[in-house]
Length: 69
Image (tube, rainbow, N blue to C red; front, side):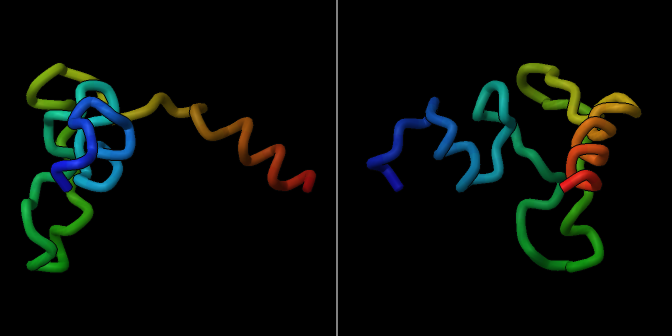
């Protein structure tokens, strides 16, 4: 995918990179196997230090809205 700019959000999404710097890895495992470790994430980005753990009430508003809908 050399046609996608490495600083674009699309590059970060398709290559599972950090949402802030698009350089650090989003998951600990580099491959899809073993399946038991596929969703393990570090607490923060190894390159820029972006915190991957959201505060407790981050998705609370979305829960109320989706319940109302």
